[in-house]
Length: 368
Image 1 (tube, one colour):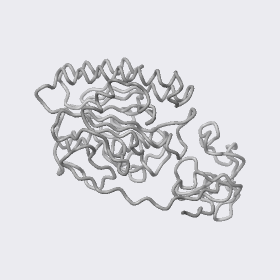
Image 2: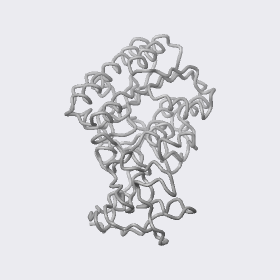
Image 3: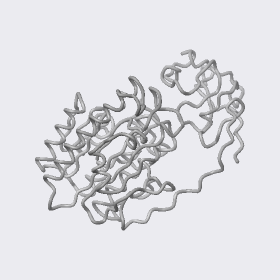
Image 4: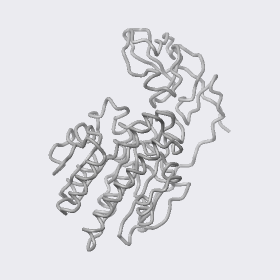
Protein backbone atom coordinates (compact mmCIF):
# COMPACT_ATOMS: atom_id res chain seq x y z
CA UNK A 1 0.00 0.00 0.00
CA UNK A 2 1.54 3.27 -1.18
CA UNK A 3 0.18 6.56 0.15
CA UNK A 4 1.56 9.79 -1.32
CA UNK A 5 0.52 12.75 0.82
CA UNK A 6 -0.71 15.78 -1.13
CA UNK A 7 -0.50 14.24 -4.61
CA UNK A 8 -2.69 16.26 -6.95
CA UNK A 9 -4.46 14.20 -9.60
CA UNK A 10 -3.76 16.39 -12.64
CA UNK A 11 -0.05 16.56 -11.80
CA UNK A 12 0.22 12.78 -12.13
CA UNK A 13 -1.53 12.98 -15.49
CA UNK A 14 0.70 15.74 -16.91
CA UNK A 15 4.13 14.79 -15.51
CA UNK A 16 6.42 12.10 -16.97
CA UNK A 17 6.48 9.54 -14.17
CA UNK A 18 7.82 6.28 -15.61
CA UNK A 19 7.30 4.13 -12.52
CA UNK A 20 3.76 5.24 -11.80
CA UNK A 21 3.19 4.63 -15.52
CA UNK A 22 4.45 1.06 -14.98
CA UNK A 23 1.86 0.61 -12.23
CA UNK A 24 -0.85 1.95 -14.55
CA UNK A 25 0.10 -0.59 -17.19
CA UNK A 26 -0.24 -3.41 -14.66
CA UNK A 27 -3.80 -2.72 -13.57
CA UNK A 28 -6.63 -0.21 -13.27
CA UNK A 29 -6.16 3.50 -12.68
CA UNK A 30 -8.12 6.69 -12.15
CA UNK A 31 -6.80 10.24 -12.19
CA UNK A 32 -10.16 11.57 -10.97
CA UNK A 33 -10.88 9.59 -7.82
CA UNK A 34 -12.61 11.28 -4.92
CA UNK A 35 -11.51 11.99 -1.39
CA UNK A 36 -14.00 11.41 1.41
CA UNK A 37 -17.05 13.69 1.24
CA UNK A 38 -17.92 14.60 4.84
CA UNK A 39 -14.85 16.58 5.98
CA UNK A 40 -12.35 19.09 4.63
CA UNK A 41 -9.56 17.82 2.36
CA UNK A 42 -6.91 17.58 5.04
CA UNK A 43 -4.63 14.75 6.07
CA UNK A 44 -6.40 13.43 9.18
CA UNK A 45 -9.76 12.55 7.64
CA UNK A 46 -8.14 11.60 4.33
CA UNK A 47 -5.76 9.04 5.79
CA UNK A 48 -8.44 7.79 8.18
CA UNK A 49 -10.82 7.17 5.27
CA UNK A 50 -8.07 5.41 3.30
CA UNK A 51 -7.35 3.20 6.32
CA UNK A 52 -10.97 2.42 7.29
CA UNK A 53 -13.01 2.51 4.07
CA UNK A 54 -15.62 4.84 5.60
CA UNK A 55 -16.54 8.51 5.71
CA UNK A 56 -15.31 10.84 8.49
CA UNK A 57 -18.89 10.98 9.74
CA UNK A 58 -18.36 7.32 10.74
CA UNK A 59 -14.69 7.14 11.73
CA UNK A 60 -14.95 10.50 13.59
CA UNK A 61 -11.62 12.02 12.49
CA UNK A 62 -12.41 15.38 10.91
CA UNK A 63 -9.07 17.22 11.27
CA UNK A 64 -5.42 16.76 12.17
CA UNK A 65 -5.96 17.32 15.88
CA UNK A 66 -8.25 14.38 16.60
CA UNK A 67 -6.42 11.42 15.02
CA UNK A 68 -6.82 9.31 18.15
CA UNK A 69 -10.60 9.64 17.94
CA UNK A 70 -10.56 7.02 15.16
CA UNK A 71 -13.67 4.90 15.72
CA UNK A 72 -13.44 2.38 12.86
CA UNK A 73 -10.98 -0.51 12.34
CA UNK A 74 -8.00 0.15 10.09
CA UNK A 75 -7.09 -2.02 7.14
CA UNK A 76 -4.02 -3.17 9.07
CA UNK A 77 -5.95 -4.52 12.07
CA UNK A 78 -8.64 -5.90 9.76
CA UNK A 79 -6.03 -7.85 7.78
CA UNK A 80 -4.23 -8.99 10.95
CA UNK A 81 -7.43 -10.23 12.59
CA UNK A 82 -8.71 -11.99 9.47
CA UNK A 83 -5.52 -13.54 8.09
CA UNK A 84 -2.80 -13.18 10.76
CA UNK A 85 -0.35 -11.83 8.19
CA UNK A 86 2.94 -10.15 9.02
CA UNK A 87 2.55 -6.39 8.52
CA UNK A 88 5.15 -3.61 8.38
CA UNK A 89 4.78 0.17 8.03
CA UNK A 90 7.48 2.64 7.00
CA UNK A 91 6.27 6.25 7.21
CA UNK A 92 7.49 9.80 6.76
CA UNK A 93 4.50 11.28 8.64
CA UNK A 94 4.89 9.63 12.03
CA UNK A 95 1.31 10.13 13.32
CA UNK A 96 0.15 7.47 10.87
CA UNK A 97 1.87 4.89 13.05
CA UNK A 98 1.82 6.62 16.43
CA UNK A 99 -1.72 8.00 16.45
CA UNK A 100 -3.59 5.68 14.10
CA UNK A 101 -2.14 2.18 13.87
CA UNK A 102 -0.37 1.74 17.21
CA UNK A 103 -2.97 3.70 19.14
CA UNK A 104 -5.65 1.37 17.78
CA UNK A 105 -3.67 -1.78 18.67
CA UNK A 106 0.08 -1.80 19.28
CA UNK A 107 0.29 -5.50 18.38
CA UNK A 108 -0.92 -5.03 14.79
CA UNK A 109 2.43 -4.13 13.25
CA UNK A 110 5.27 -6.63 13.23
CA UNK A 111 7.70 -3.87 12.28
CA UNK A 112 7.60 -0.11 11.90
CA UNK A 113 10.02 2.62 10.85
CA UNK A 114 9.59 6.34 11.51
CA UNK A 115 11.70 7.90 8.79
CA UNK A 116 13.31 11.34 8.64
CA UNK A 117 13.03 11.49 4.85
CA UNK A 118 11.19 9.83 1.98
CA UNK A 119 14.41 8.25 0.74
CA UNK A 120 15.12 6.65 4.12
CA UNK A 121 11.50 5.52 4.38
CA UNK A 122 11.60 3.86 0.95
CA UNK A 123 14.98 2.25 1.63
CA UNK A 124 13.61 0.53 4.73
CA UNK A 125 10.51 -0.65 2.86
CA UNK A 126 12.67 -1.98 0.01
CA UNK A 127 14.80 -3.84 2.56
CA UNK A 128 11.65 -5.46 4.00
CA UNK A 129 10.35 -6.43 0.55
CA UNK A 130 13.64 -8.05 -0.45
CA UNK A 131 13.78 -9.96 2.84
CA UNK A 132 10.38 -11.53 2.04
CA UNK A 133 9.67 -11.48 5.77
CA UNK A 134 6.41 -9.51 5.54
CA UNK A 135 3.11 -10.12 3.77
CA UNK A 136 1.76 -6.55 3.81
CA UNK A 137 3.96 -3.46 3.61
CA UNK A 138 2.63 0.09 3.92
CA UNK A 139 4.64 3.17 2.90
CA UNK A 140 3.90 6.88 3.22
CA UNK A 141 5.63 9.56 1.13
CA UNK A 142 5.42 13.10 2.55
CA UNK A 143 7.59 15.09 0.14
CA UNK A 144 4.89 16.24 -2.27
CA UNK A 145 2.80 17.66 0.57
CA UNK A 146 5.82 19.45 2.03
CA UNK A 147 6.70 20.98 -1.35
CA UNK A 148 3.10 22.05 -1.87
CA UNK A 149 2.83 23.78 1.49
CA UNK A 150 6.18 25.48 0.93
CA UNK A 151 5.77 26.94 -2.58
CA UNK A 152 2.54 25.59 -4.03
CA UNK A 153 0.62 22.52 -5.20
CA UNK A 154 1.04 23.05 -8.94
CA UNK A 155 2.41 20.82 -11.68
CA UNK A 156 3.91 23.83 -13.45
CA UNK A 157 6.05 24.68 -10.39
CA UNK A 158 9.46 23.04 -10.55
CA UNK A 159 9.58 22.65 -6.75
CA UNK A 160 6.42 20.54 -6.67
CA UNK A 161 6.98 18.67 -9.93
CA UNK A 162 10.56 17.77 -9.02
CA UNK A 163 9.47 16.36 -5.68
CA UNK A 164 6.82 14.21 -7.37
CA UNK A 165 9.46 12.98 -9.85
CA UNK A 166 11.74 12.05 -6.92
CA UNK A 167 8.90 10.10 -5.32
CA UNK A 168 8.22 8.30 -8.60
CA UNK A 169 11.84 7.16 -8.67
CA UNK A 170 11.51 5.75 -5.14
CA UNK A 171 8.25 4.03 -6.09
CA UNK A 172 10.26 2.36 -8.84
CA UNK A 173 12.67 0.85 -6.31
CA UNK A 174 9.73 -0.67 -4.45
CA UNK A 175 8.12 -2.03 -7.61
CA UNK A 176 11.45 -3.57 -8.64
CA UNK A 177 11.70 -5.26 -5.24
CA UNK A 178 8.19 -6.70 -5.59
CA UNK A 179 9.00 -7.98 -9.08
CA UNK A 180 12.25 -9.52 -7.89
CA UNK A 181 10.73 -11.47 -4.99
CA UNK A 182 7.19 -12.35 -6.09
CA UNK A 183 7.53 -14.19 -9.38
CA UNK A 184 5.62 -17.26 -8.17
CA UNK A 185 2.91 -15.60 -6.09
CA UNK A 186 0.16 -13.08 -6.70
CA UNK A 187 0.85 -9.56 -5.49
CA UNK A 188 -1.16 -6.35 -5.28
CA UNK A 189 -0.10 -2.69 -5.09
CA UNK A 190 -2.58 0.05 -4.20
CA UNK A 191 -1.46 3.67 -4.65
CA UNK A 192 -3.45 6.76 -3.76
CA UNK A 193 -3.39 10.02 -1.78
CA UNK A 194 -5.10 11.73 1.14
CA UNK A 195 -5.86 15.00 -0.72
CA UNK A 196 -4.80 17.28 -3.56
CA UNK A 197 -4.04 20.98 -3.15
CA UNK A 198 -4.06 24.46 -4.63
CA UNK A 199 -1.82 27.38 -3.75
CA UNK A 200 -0.09 26.40 -0.53
CA UNK A 201 -3.18 24.83 1.06
CA UNK A 202 -5.65 22.00 0.45
CA UNK A 203 -8.80 22.64 2.46
CA UNK A 204 -11.00 24.27 -0.18
CA UNK A 205 -14.02 22.40 -1.55
CA UNK A 206 -12.95 22.15 -5.21
CA UNK A 207 -11.48 19.60 -7.60
CA UNK A 208 -7.88 20.75 -7.15
CA UNK A 209 -8.15 19.70 -3.51
CA UNK A 210 -10.67 16.84 -3.62
CA UNK A 211 -9.58 14.80 -6.66
CA UNK A 212 -6.72 12.31 -6.35
CA UNK A 213 -5.08 9.49 -8.32
CA UNK A 214 -5.93 5.88 -7.50
CA UNK A 215 -4.05 2.92 -9.00
CA UNK A 216 -4.42 -0.82 -8.41
CA UNK A 217 -1.62 -2.87 -9.98
CA UNK A 218 -1.18 -6.64 -9.83
CA UNK A 219 0.01 -9.76 -11.61
CA UNK A 220 -3.32 -11.41 -10.76
CA UNK A 221 -5.55 -12.30 -13.73
CA UNK A 222 -8.47 -11.07 -11.59
CA UNK A 223 -7.31 -7.46 -11.89
CA UNK A 224 -8.48 -5.55 -14.95
CA UNK A 225 -6.16 -3.39 -17.06
CA UNK A 226 -7.36 0.05 -18.08
CA UNK A 227 -9.00 3.06 -16.48
CA UNK A 228 -12.10 3.67 -14.40
CA UNK A 229 -15.03 5.41 -16.11
CA UNK A 230 -15.54 9.09 -15.36
CA UNK A 231 -19.00 8.26 -13.98
CA UNK A 232 -17.42 5.99 -11.35
CA UNK A 233 -13.83 7.17 -10.77
CA UNK A 234 -13.31 5.48 -7.42
CA UNK A 235 -12.54 6.86 -3.98
CA UNK A 236 -9.78 6.78 -1.39
CA UNK A 237 -12.22 4.73 0.68
CA UNK A 238 -11.76 1.88 -1.83
CA UNK A 239 -8.38 0.90 -0.31
CA UNK A 240 -9.62 -1.38 2.48
CA UNK A 241 -12.28 -3.30 0.51
CA UNK A 242 -9.86 -3.77 -2.41
CA UNK A 243 -7.14 -5.25 -0.21
CA UNK A 244 -9.58 -7.49 1.65
CA UNK A 245 -11.12 -8.71 -1.61
CA UNK A 246 -7.69 -9.57 -2.98
CA UNK A 247 -6.80 -11.55 0.13
CA UNK A 248 -10.07 -13.30 0.88
CA UNK A 249 -12.78 -12.62 -1.66
CA UNK A 250 -16.12 -10.93 -1.11
CA UNK A 251 -16.80 -12.65 2.21
CA UNK A 252 -13.71 -11.01 3.69
CA UNK A 253 -14.99 -7.46 3.10
CA UNK A 254 -16.44 -5.92 6.29
CA UNK A 255 -20.04 -4.75 6.26
CA UNK A 256 -21.14 -1.11 6.15
CA UNK A 257 -18.16 0.30 4.25
CA UNK A 258 -18.51 3.39 2.09
CA UNK A 259 -15.75 2.26 -0.29
CA UNK A 260 -15.94 -0.51 -2.89
CA UNK A 261 -13.54 -2.93 -4.56
CA UNK A 262 -11.52 -1.14 -7.24
CA UNK A 263 -10.19 -2.64 -10.47
CA UNK A 264 -11.19 -6.32 -10.23
CA UNK A 265 -12.85 -8.08 -13.17
CA UNK A 266 -14.83 -10.44 -10.94
CA UNK A 267 -16.42 -7.75 -8.77
CA UNK A 268 -19.40 -5.62 -9.80
CA UNK A 269 -19.39 -2.16 -8.27
CA UNK A 270 -22.64 -0.57 -7.18
CA UNK A 271 -23.54 2.36 -9.44
CA UNK A 272 -22.58 5.75 -8.02
CA UNK A 273 -25.46 7.82 -6.65
CA UNK A 274 -27.15 10.17 -9.08
CA UNK A 275 -25.63 13.66 -8.78
CA UNK A 276 -27.87 16.37 -7.37
CA UNK A 277 -28.92 19.31 -9.51
CA UNK A 278 -26.05 21.67 -10.12
CA UNK A 279 -25.89 24.56 -7.68
CA UNK A 280 -26.45 28.08 -8.97
CA UNK A 281 -23.78 29.86 -6.90
CA UNK A 282 -24.30 33.29 -5.40
CA UNK A 283 -21.56 33.46 -2.79
CA UNK A 284 -22.57 36.83 -1.36
CA UNK A 285 -26.14 35.73 -0.63
CA UNK A 286 -26.25 31.93 -0.22
CA UNK A 287 -24.18 28.76 0.04
CA UNK A 288 -24.33 25.66 -2.16
CA UNK A 289 -25.63 22.52 -0.43
CA UNK A 290 -23.18 20.44 -2.47
CA UNK A 291 -20.32 22.41 -0.88
CA UNK A 292 -21.91 22.45 2.59
CA UNK A 293 -21.97 26.24 2.20
CA UNK A 294 -18.14 26.38 2.20
CA UNK A 295 -18.48 28.74 -0.77
CA UNK A 296 -20.54 31.32 1.17
CA UNK A 297 -18.89 34.78 1.38
CA UNK A 298 -21.77 36.93 2.62
CA UNK A 299 -22.05 39.08 5.74
CA UNK A 300 -24.37 37.08 8.02
CA UNK A 301 -22.74 37.19 11.46
CA UNK A 302 -25.31 35.71 13.84
CA UNK A 303 -26.14 32.07 14.49
CA UNK A 304 -29.49 30.43 13.82
CA UNK A 305 -30.39 30.95 17.48
CA UNK A 306 -29.47 34.64 17.34
CA UNK A 307 -26.04 34.60 19.03
CA UNK A 308 -23.47 37.11 17.76
CA UNK A 309 -20.48 35.48 16.04
CA UNK A 310 -16.98 35.78 17.45
CA UNK A 311 -14.42 37.24 15.03
CA UNK A 312 -12.27 34.56 13.41
CA UNK A 313 -9.16 36.57 14.31
CA UNK A 314 -10.12 36.57 18.00
CA UNK A 315 -9.26 33.89 20.54
CA UNK A 316 -11.83 35.09 23.07
CA UNK A 317 -14.09 33.85 24.50
CA UNK A 318 -13.17 30.68 22.56
CA UNK A 319 -9.64 29.74 21.52
CA UNK A 320 -9.43 27.88 18.22
CA UNK A 321 -7.32 26.98 15.19
CA UNK A 322 -9.79 28.10 12.49
CA UNK A 323 -7.80 31.16 11.50
CA UNK A 324 -7.16 32.75 8.12
CA UNK A 325 -3.53 31.63 8.40
CA UNK A 326 -4.54 27.99 8.79
CA UNK A 327 -7.47 28.16 6.32
CA UNK A 328 -6.40 30.83 3.81
CA UNK A 329 -8.99 29.91 1.18
CA UNK A 330 -12.03 29.86 3.45
CA UNK A 331 -12.91 33.57 3.64
CA UNK A 332 -12.42 33.85 7.40
CA UNK A 333 -13.04 37.59 7.60
CA UNK A 334 -14.51 39.64 10.45
CA UNK A 335 -17.11 37.51 12.24
CA UNK A 336 -19.00 36.29 9.19
CA UNK A 337 -20.46 32.79 9.09
CA UNK A 338 -18.22 30.38 7.18
CA UNK A 339 -17.50 26.65 6.84
CA UNK A 340 -13.74 26.07 6.66
CA UNK A 341 -13.71 22.48 7.89
CA UNK A 342 -16.55 20.39 6.50
CA UNK A 343 -19.36 20.97 8.99
CA UNK A 344 -22.91 20.51 7.70
CA UNK A 345 -23.27 24.22 6.88
CA UNK A 346 -21.86 27.69 7.51
CA UNK A 347 -21.16 28.33 11.21
CA UNK A 348 -19.21 30.48 13.62
CA UNK A 349 -17.81 30.57 17.13
CA UNK A 350 -20.12 32.63 19.31
CA UNK A 351 -19.52 35.51 21.70
CA UNK A 352 -21.40 33.53 24.34
CA UNK A 353 -18.75 31.94 26.61
CA UNK A 354 -21.15 29.05 27.31
CA UNK A 355 -21.81 28.17 23.65
CA UNK A 356 -18.63 27.45 21.68
CA UNK A 357 -20.06 27.35 18.16
CA UNK A 358 -23.35 27.11 16.29
CA UNK A 359 -24.62 26.79 12.76
CA UNK A 360 -25.87 29.95 11.05
CA UNK A 361 -29.09 30.39 9.14
CA UNK A 362 -27.43 30.98 5.76
CA UNK A 363 -29.77 30.53 2.77
CA UNK A 364 -29.11 27.52 0.54
CA UNK A 365 -28.56 28.40 -3.11
CA UNK A 366 -30.98 27.18 -5.75
CA UNK A 367 -30.09 24.31 -8.05
CA UNK A 368 -30.52 24.05 -11.80
